[in-house]
Length: 448
Ligand code: NDP
Ligand code: 2IT
Image (cartoon, rainbow, N blue to C red):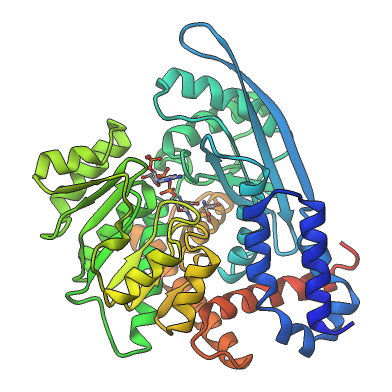
């Protein structure tokens, strides 16, 4: 069969086998659409049916998570882990706790993770998990009871050389702590089974900062290809969680001005810039008080756009850092019309396919999620290395490694795009560079 026919057949099978899983379909289509020229050059991938194997998770776990709320009610959530691909190393990827979590969302995230982890240059396979539990509005004790129950089942399936989860939306340092404690009690083992741990018990310096910093480092590499820099650039950032916060911090350090943050309630617009002092307020508000971003507008007297995302605000560079499909085609057109020259994706799959097409066809600097936000999982990989060595590296050492990894990821994407005749198209470049390494490893390992 010809490459195009193979791609079409595999995609149709994905639709039939995973009915209704629209996010998963979207993520698979984006990758498959880049692979035509690769299959033409490498008929051995067609022969070994690599595509059909790579779109099927190696293992899918779904389990009941019973827990008790503060009023004594018995509650039930659904827990998941999708162990997607282990060709390059143990399964690795975050745990999302959000009411929208379902198989489709976790399969899209797990699939993306496989390629992202390949780009990091570190030995990590891909996976993703989580639950439809909503930590918002829950007490610390309720979150603890949920996390303990979740880990009581998950602990059978993970391990430092098997599967190493981490944070994602709704899973931060607090949740990782509760889960780690429960694993240790059940297994009587103090090992690196989670990343994003606190510094006192095996965490890595720079892991909290890594996704945001990495996303800005990636953007800086894109700017350099046009002889440009962040000096004086107006930047819009969505979300106000882990990724958004450290994106703003690094933008400030590099001389840019971040003017927005958001949450599911709306967007704040601060034309004077979210400086270090205001960012400290956001971190306290979001990470400790667990409040809403509107309180920023109340405190600093700036505009609050209720129910709105930041994309209507004029900017040079945009950093979507909240969730999937948060930039649609109209948002993309508005960004372009307002002169936006760069989009670097901190969130996973934040642009709809139509929005991504706008960025690619208008040839702006566009860093797709699996490349631009890989700094988080890369630094998780560095946390795993430190755990194995039973050593901790300095802040400077981890940051330098992270920076070099982001430079290398940009280079791999840029070079692959050139090699396959799509210069400057980092979407295709990321998919191709990520894929080739996994496909070759799957060939080496036989029928896996
Ligand atoms: P957090 O939970 O720390 O923050 C999430 C932020 O996004 C919050 O401001 C939240 O607002 C907002 N948000 C989440 N869901 C929605 C929604 N459906 N609509 C509108 N706003 C929403 O998560 P992270 O910062 O860790 O993750 C943000 C994104 O970055 C995700 O796409 C994640 O997959 C991705 N990512 C994270 C990495 C990490 O290391 N943490 C690594 C790589 C990617 P609200 O509080 O109102 O829900
Ligand atoms: O989407 C992601 O890359 C993450 N949420 C981080 C995963 C990890 O294992 O650090």
